[in-house]
Amino acid sequence: MTILTRRSLVTVGAGGLLLSGCDKLSYNPKMVSVLESAEGATERWQRLIGRNALAREFSEADMSPVFKANGSRSVDTDDYLAHSESDFVDWRLKVDGLVARPLSLSLAQLRAAPQRTQITRHDCVEGWSAIGKWTGPQLGHILKAAGVLPTARYAMFLCADNYGGEASKGGDQSAGLYYESIDMVDAFHPQTILAHTMNGETLSVPHGAPLRLRVERQLGYKHAKYVMGIRLVDSFKGFGAGKGGYWPDRGYEWFAGI
Ligand SMILES: Nc1nc2c(c(=O)[nH]1)N[C@H]1C(S)=C(S)[C@@H](COP(=O)(O)O)O[C@H]1N2
Ligand SMILES: [Mo]
Picture (cartoon, rainbow, N blue to C red):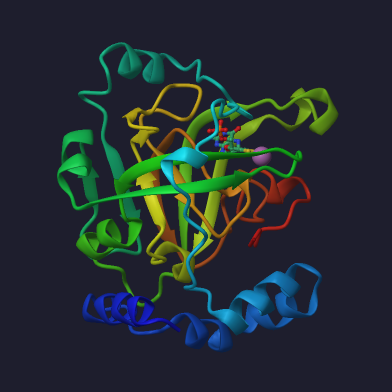
Protein backbone atom coordinates (compact mmCIF):
# COMPACT_ATOMS: atom_id res chain seq x y z
CA MET A 1 0.00 0.00 0.00
CA THR A 2 1.45 3.37 -0.97
CA ILE A 3 1.95 6.31 1.33
CA LEU A 4 -0.67 8.18 -0.68
CA THR A 5 -3.15 5.41 -0.02
CA ARG A 6 -2.32 5.36 3.65
CA ARG A 7 -2.74 9.08 3.90
CA SER A 8 -6.15 8.90 2.24
CA LEU A 9 -7.19 6.16 4.65
CA VAL A 10 -6.02 8.25 7.60
CA THR A 11 -8.03 11.18 6.25
CA VAL A 12 -11.07 8.97 5.92
CA GLY A 13 -10.54 7.69 9.46
CA ALA A 14 -10.49 11.21 10.83
CA GLY A 15 -13.89 11.76 9.21
CA GLY A 16 -15.35 8.91 11.21
CA LEU A 17 -15.13 5.96 8.82
CA LEU A 18 -12.73 3.75 10.67
CA LEU A 19 -12.61 0.57 8.64
CA SER A 20 -9.93 0.27 6.00
CA GLY A 21 -10.69 -1.53 2.74
CA CYS A 22 -9.38 -4.89 3.88
CA ASP A 23 -11.06 -4.70 7.28
CA LYS A 24 -14.37 -3.90 5.65
CA LEU A 25 -14.06 -6.87 3.31
CA SER A 26 -13.12 -9.40 5.95
CA TYR A 27 -15.89 -8.27 8.31
CA ASN A 28 -18.52 -8.45 5.64
CA PRO A 29 -20.19 -11.90 5.63
CA LYS A 30 -21.73 -11.26 2.23
CA MET A 31 -18.22 -11.08 0.80
CA VAL A 32 -17.58 -14.71 1.72
CA SER A 33 -19.93 -15.92 -0.98
CA VAL A 34 -18.86 -13.23 -3.40
CA LEU A 35 -15.22 -14.20 -3.00
CA GLU A 36 -16.01 -17.80 -3.96
CA SER A 37 -17.58 -16.81 -7.25
CA ALA A 38 -15.90 -15.91 -10.54
CA GLU A 39 -16.78 -12.31 -9.80
CA GLY A 40 -14.74 -12.72 -6.65
CA ALA A 41 -11.57 -13.39 -8.65
CA THR A 42 -11.02 -9.72 -9.50
CA GLU A 43 -12.14 -8.74 -6.05
CA ARG A 44 -9.62 -11.16 -4.50
CA TRP A 45 -6.94 -9.82 -6.79
CA GLN A 46 -7.77 -6.20 -5.99
CA ARG A 47 -7.78 -7.11 -2.33
CA LEU A 48 -4.32 -8.63 -2.64
CA ILE A 49 -2.71 -5.67 -4.38
CA GLY A 50 -4.94 -3.22 -2.58
CA ARG A 51 -8.42 -2.04 -3.39
CA ASN A 52 -6.97 1.45 -3.03
CA ALA A 53 -4.33 1.01 -5.75
CA LEU A 54 -4.65 3.66 -8.42
CA ALA A 55 -5.92 3.05 -11.93
CA ARG A 56 -3.41 4.05 -14.59
CA GLU A 57 -3.47 7.72 -15.54
CA PHE A 58 -2.51 8.94 -18.99
CA SER A 59 -1.17 12.12 -20.57
CA GLU A 60 -3.04 14.67 -22.69
CA ALA A 61 -1.42 13.14 -25.78
CA ASP A 62 -3.14 9.81 -25.05
CA MET A 63 -6.65 11.27 -25.02
CA SER A 64 -9.01 9.66 -27.55
CA PRO A 65 -10.06 12.01 -30.38
CA VAL A 66 -13.55 10.52 -30.13
CA PHE A 67 -15.18 9.34 -26.91
CA LYS A 68 -18.34 7.41 -27.69
CA ALA A 69 -21.48 8.18 -25.68
CA ASN A 70 -23.13 4.91 -24.67
CA GLY A 71 -26.34 3.72 -23.04
CA SER A 72 -28.68 6.64 -22.43
CA ARG A 73 -27.56 9.65 -24.42
CA SER A 74 -30.30 11.98 -23.18
CA VAL A 75 -33.10 12.14 -20.64
CA ASP A 76 -36.65 13.00 -21.68
CA THR A 77 -38.35 13.87 -18.38
CA ASP A 78 -39.84 17.38 -18.07
CA ASP A 79 -37.82 17.98 -14.93
CA TYR A 80 -34.51 17.11 -16.56
CA LEU A 81 -35.25 19.06 -19.75
CA ALA A 82 -36.13 22.18 -17.73
CA HIS A 83 -32.86 21.92 -15.80
CA SER A 84 -30.84 21.32 -18.93
CA GLU A 85 -32.42 24.36 -20.63
CA SER A 86 -31.36 26.56 -17.71
CA ASP A 87 -27.82 25.09 -17.61
CA PHE A 88 -28.66 23.32 -14.34
CA VAL A 89 -28.47 26.55 -12.26
CA ASP A 90 -31.34 25.43 -10.00
CA TRP A 91 -30.36 21.78 -10.06
CA ARG A 92 -29.21 20.20 -6.78
CA LEU A 93 -27.43 16.96 -6.00
CA LYS A 94 -29.04 15.26 -3.01
CA VAL A 95 -26.86 13.28 -0.63
CA ASP A 96 -28.90 11.41 1.94
CA GLY A 97 -29.57 8.05 3.57
CA LEU A 98 -27.14 6.87 6.25
CA VAL A 99 -25.43 10.23 6.76
CA ALA A 100 -25.33 12.59 9.73
CA ARG A 101 -26.02 15.69 7.59
CA PRO A 102 -28.04 15.26 4.37
CA LEU A 103 -26.78 17.64 1.68
CA SER A 104 -28.32 19.43 -1.25
CA LEU A 105 -25.50 20.76 -3.42
CA SER A 106 -25.53 23.11 -6.38
CA LEU A 107 -23.12 22.72 -9.26
CA ALA A 108 -21.39 25.89 -8.03
CA GLN A 109 -20.82 24.24 -4.65
CA LEU A 110 -19.54 21.07 -6.29
CA ARG A 111 -17.16 23.17 -8.38
CA ALA A 112 -16.01 25.14 -5.32
CA ALA A 113 -14.91 21.97 -3.49
CA PRO A 114 -11.32 20.75 -3.99
CA GLN A 115 -11.13 19.30 -7.51
CA ARG A 116 -9.35 16.33 -9.02
CA THR A 117 -8.53 15.99 -12.70
CA GLN A 118 -7.59 12.58 -14.10
CA ILE A 119 -6.98 11.18 -17.55
CA THR A 120 -8.13 7.58 -17.51
CA ARG A 121 -9.28 4.78 -19.76
CA HIS A 122 -12.97 3.89 -19.81
CA ASP A 123 -13.63 0.22 -20.58
CA CYS A 124 -17.11 -0.80 -21.68
CA VAL A 125 -18.20 -4.46 -21.58
CA GLU A 126 -19.37 -4.04 -25.17
CA GLY A 127 -15.72 -4.13 -26.16
CA TRP A 128 -14.66 -0.53 -26.64
CA SER A 129 -12.38 1.73 -24.63
CA ALA A 130 -11.65 5.44 -24.68
CA ILE A 131 -9.28 7.72 -22.82
CA GLY A 132 -10.75 10.93 -21.45
CA LYS A 133 -10.02 13.67 -18.96
CA TRP A 134 -12.39 14.10 -16.03
CA THR A 135 -12.68 16.81 -13.39
CA GLY A 136 -14.74 17.02 -10.24
CA PRO A 137 -14.67 16.73 -6.47
CA GLN A 138 -13.70 13.41 -4.90
CA LEU A 139 -16.78 11.52 -3.76
CA GLY A 140 -15.00 10.83 -0.45
CA HIS A 141 -14.73 14.56 0.20
CA ILE A 142 -18.46 15.04 -0.32
CA LEU A 143 -19.33 12.02 1.81
CA LYS A 144 -17.08 13.27 4.60
CA ALA A 145 -18.98 16.56 4.55
CA ALA A 146 -22.23 14.61 4.87
CA GLY A 147 -20.84 12.48 7.71
CA VAL A 148 -20.98 8.78 6.89
CA LEU A 149 -22.77 6.77 9.57
CA PRO A 150 -21.02 3.54 10.63
CA THR A 151 -23.94 1.45 9.30
CA ALA A 152 -23.45 2.69 5.70
CA ARG A 153 -22.16 -0.05 3.39
CA TYR A 154 -22.91 1.21 -0.11
CA ALA A 155 -23.31 4.46 -1.98
CA MET A 156 -26.29 4.24 -4.36
CA PHE A 157 -26.33 6.54 -7.38
CA LEU A 158 -29.84 7.46 -8.47
CA CYS A 159 -30.00 8.59 -12.08
CA ALA A 160 -32.52 10.61 -14.07
CA ASP A 161 -32.83 8.30 -17.07
CA ASN A 162 -35.32 5.53 -17.57
CA TYR A 163 -33.15 3.26 -19.68
CA GLY A 164 -35.21 1.25 -22.12
CA GLY A 165 -32.21 -0.54 -23.50
CA GLU A 166 -31.64 -1.84 -26.97
CA ALA A 167 -33.59 -4.93 -28.00
CA SER A 168 -30.38 -6.97 -28.01
CA LYS A 169 -29.86 -6.20 -24.33
CA GLY A 170 -33.32 -6.80 -22.98
CA GLY A 171 -35.32 -4.22 -24.89
CA ASP A 172 -38.20 -2.12 -23.72
CA GLN A 173 -39.45 -4.83 -21.39
CA SER A 174 -36.52 -4.16 -19.10
CA ALA A 175 -36.94 -0.39 -18.91
CA GLY A 176 -36.16 0.97 -15.46
CA LEU A 177 -34.52 3.90 -13.75
CA TYR A 178 -30.78 3.60 -14.15
CA TYR A 179 -28.96 3.25 -10.88
CA GLU A 180 -25.69 1.90 -9.63
CA SER A 181 -23.89 1.32 -6.35
CA ILE A 182 -20.38 0.93 -5.02
CA ASP A 183 -19.01 -0.08 -1.63
CA MET A 184 -17.28 2.26 0.80
CA VAL A 185 -13.82 1.19 -0.39
CA ASP A 186 -14.55 2.42 -3.91
CA ALA A 187 -16.52 5.40 -2.59
CA PHE A 188 -13.41 6.66 -0.76
CA HIS A 189 -10.94 5.68 -3.49
CA PRO A 190 -8.97 8.80 -4.45
CA GLN A 191 -9.91 8.46 -8.14
CA THR A 192 -13.63 8.16 -7.47
CA ILE A 193 -14.95 11.57 -8.46
CA LEU A 194 -18.21 13.28 -9.37
CA ALA A 195 -17.34 14.68 -12.77
CA HIS A 196 -18.97 17.88 -14.04
CA THR A 197 -16.25 18.44 -16.64
CA MET A 198 -15.01 16.17 -19.43
CA ASN A 199 -11.98 16.91 -21.59
CA GLY A 200 -11.89 20.45 -20.17
CA GLU A 201 -15.49 21.26 -21.04
CA THR A 202 -18.77 21.25 -19.12
CA LEU A 203 -20.11 17.71 -19.18
CA SER A 204 -22.46 17.33 -22.14
CA VAL A 205 -25.90 15.73 -22.03
CA PRO A 206 -24.84 12.56 -23.94
CA HIS A 207 -22.07 11.96 -21.38
CA GLY A 208 -24.33 12.45 -18.34
CA ALA A 209 -24.82 16.17 -17.59
CA PRO A 210 -24.74 17.72 -15.15
CA LEU A 211 -22.88 15.12 -13.06
CA ARG A 212 -21.61 11.59 -13.52
CA LEU A 213 -19.64 9.17 -11.47
CA ARG A 214 -16.08 8.18 -12.38
CA VAL A 215 -15.04 5.07 -10.50
CA GLU A 216 -11.83 4.21 -12.27
CA ARG A 217 -11.19 0.71 -10.94
CA GLN A 218 -14.53 -0.45 -12.36
CA LEU A 219 -16.09 -1.19 -15.76
CA GLY A 220 -18.06 1.38 -17.76
CA TYR A 221 -21.56 0.55 -16.59
CA LYS A 222 -20.63 1.40 -12.97
CA HIS A 223 -19.93 5.02 -14.06
CA ALA A 224 -23.45 6.33 -13.48
CA LYS A 225 -24.45 9.31 -15.65
CA TYR A 226 -27.21 11.85 -14.87
CA VAL A 227 -26.66 11.39 -11.11
CA MET A 228 -29.43 13.20 -9.24
CA GLY A 229 -28.93 11.69 -5.82
CA ILE A 230 -26.49 9.68 -3.78
CA ARG A 231 -27.99 7.60 -1.00
CA LEU A 232 -25.93 5.74 1.56
CA VAL A 233 -27.54 2.42 2.41
CA ASP A 234 -26.83 -0.84 4.21
CA SER A 235 -28.49 -3.05 1.58
CA PHE A 236 -29.74 -2.98 -2.02
CA LYS A 237 -33.28 -3.85 -0.93
CA GLY A 238 -35.94 -1.58 -2.40
CA PHE A 239 -33.86 -0.51 -5.42
CA GLY A 240 -34.76 -2.11 -8.76
CA ALA A 241 -34.54 -5.90 -8.54
CA GLY A 242 -32.24 -5.66 -5.54
CA LYS A 243 -28.90 -6.51 -7.18
CA GLY A 244 -27.41 -3.04 -6.73
CA GLY A 245 -27.62 -1.65 -10.25
CA TYR A 246 -29.49 -1.51 -13.54
CA TRP A 247 -27.12 -3.96 -15.25
CA PRO A 248 -26.50 -6.13 -12.17
CA ASP A 249 -30.32 -6.55 -12.05
CA ARG A 250 -30.02 -7.92 -15.60
CA GLY A 251 -27.27 -10.44 -14.87
CA TYR A 252 -24.09 -8.39 -14.99
CA GLU A 253 -21.65 -8.53 -12.09
CA TRP A 254 -22.16 -6.01 -9.31
CA PHE A 255 -18.46 -5.87 -8.57
CA ALA A 256 -17.05 -4.99 -11.98
CA GLY A 257 -13.47 -4.37 -10.93
CA ILE A 258 -10.72 -3.95 -13.53
N1 LIG B 1 -27.50 6.91 -16.12
C1 LIG B 1 -26.80 6.09 -16.94
N2 LIG B 1 -25.51 5.88 -16.68
C2 LIG B 1 -24.77 5.08 -17.48
C3 LIG B 1 -25.36 4.41 -18.59
C4 LIG B 1 -26.75 4.65 -18.85
O1 LIG B 1 -27.36 4.13 -19.80
N3 LIG B 1 -27.43 5.50 -17.99
N4 LIG B 1 -24.58 3.57 -19.37
C5 LIG B 1 -23.34 3.06 -18.77
C6 LIG B 1 -22.43 2.43 -19.72
S1 LIG B 1 -22.75 0.84 -20.20
C7 LIG B 1 -21.27 3.04 -20.13
S2 LIG B 1 -20.13 2.25 -21.09
C8 LIG B 1 -21.02 4.45 -19.77
C9 LIG B 1 -20.88 5.27 -21.03
O2 LIG B 1 -20.45 6.55 -20.70
P1 LIG B 1 -20.29 7.59 -21.88
O3 LIG B 1 -21.65 7.79 -22.48
O4 LIG B 1 -19.72 8.82 -21.27
O5 LIG B 1 -19.35 6.94 -22.88
O6 LIG B 1 -22.02 5.03 -18.97
C10 LIG B 1 -22.58 4.16 -18.04
N5 LIG B 1 -23.45 4.92 -17.20
MO1 LIG C 1 -20.77 0.06 -21.05
